[in-house]
Image (cartoon, rainbow, N blue to C red; front, top):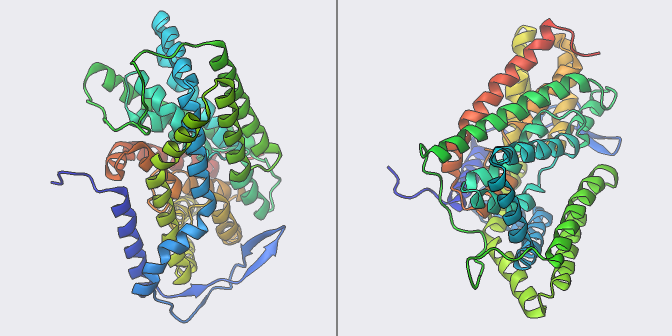
Length: 459
């Protein structure tokens, strides 16, 4: 038995080597693509074999730098926001605010067990409405200290935003980046079928909350020792006392809440992405330092320490992207897509829709981007659904499930591996903990996909 869990860098590196080998095993092939409403979509029926492009040792060694270039935006986002949050932490506002929450929970014991579910519902709504994903790299910097201050571990700290938003993402009713794109390609009215999708959202969110709360109960009763990990940032405190929740720190927390509201509004209505979000939190950090009179020296040190603390996460994100670089250069992604879609053609409707779900899940390993997967697979899945007599709404739902439910565990996702690196949670430990939730999600998905074949749930 392993004495020490494999490092995330080792895991991603092995996956990179595996995909390099697969370019020698899987035949090369490609679909034709065309522009449709500003998106590049696959033209069904145009797959053709191509000359193999197996990737060699040189390609393997070049892949990391190319992965870093491809993931440069997210890497810069992680370092800048990590530095900004370190400034926010150095002001003492977060510690003082968390202390206030814990004091309230101590005075009202019944409220203690509402904190995690309420937060998970909020993050699930964020996943369902604007597809919160990269933002999890920001929020775990808040929820991990919250979880630890309540006596829980970093698994709980990760689960609050990450599993909460994952449940909402997979069960989204109006997410424009997944459901919206998929419905647009399927020529369905954007936002149609929202009634059944909100029902799905309730089911997924409830499953996620029950899973996390059962784990918390085990921690509280001592039936589970909990995962002890290092602090994300090494903070210097003159004493162990909670900082005073003074007027300046209250103003900082109000600004922080306003920044969260601005983030949600900007992502939903103004097309904000990681550029604008990183600028927002950088401004928040600098303004907070001024309000609390942190000083130039302490501000600079806090920023550099925060960025330095997330350097490993940034490296893992770049390496995860390099896996896709190898797969794209080896021209094996379309071959996998072609083989997977061909596998669902000769089965009854109720079986075919389940296979569509599993096919989307496998493709998600190669294409972790929800919008990217929608643009590539829905032009094929839509006519396939028509041929099989499956509702296009159900085909979109199968895409949602396949795309969203595996996101918390696939090693090709830079966000997933980055979050685990930030929290210092080994990948195999995370997988061992979360697999039961993924299985519960999968079983619920199969039932929710089968229901429209027997009951008219789509208006």
